[in-house]
Image (cartoon, rainbow, N blue to C red; front, side, top):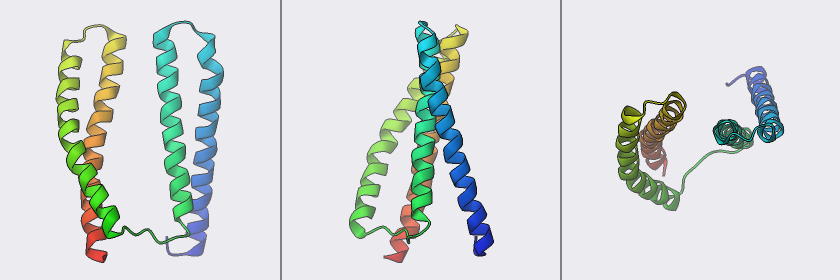
Amino acid sequence: MTLPENRKHFEELIKKWIILEDSTIEASSDLIGNSTNPIVKAIIDLVKMDSQKHKRILETIRLSLDTAVTFSTDDLQVVGSFIEKHAAMEKNAVETAEQAVQMSSLPIPKFLLEQLLQDEKNHDAYMHELNEIKGYMAADT
């Protein structure tokens, strides 16, 4: 993204994506009241929460484009502590979720459990990537 026109296009894509996430959040808010079924409400709410999370991440990316991203020694300690504490919990969560998925025979609960399991696996992958970033950032301090 070294060329100015690439950066401008990238920023436009991020802004467009934020608008799309806003649309999903709004549609979810409008639709959630149309059902009394707790499963339907939960699915809509999960999509809404994911879109809220995506929007927050995208806004952070957009704001970070104009500043250098650095980690202080204190930041690196916090990240290291978070990775260490979260890794053990995440491993346990993945194992528990895998067992729950295997035991579930009803399609809707199984679907929801599989989504949660995928989230837990993603969290585990985030920790590995965050640890690599931490190492990269530590080399710069």
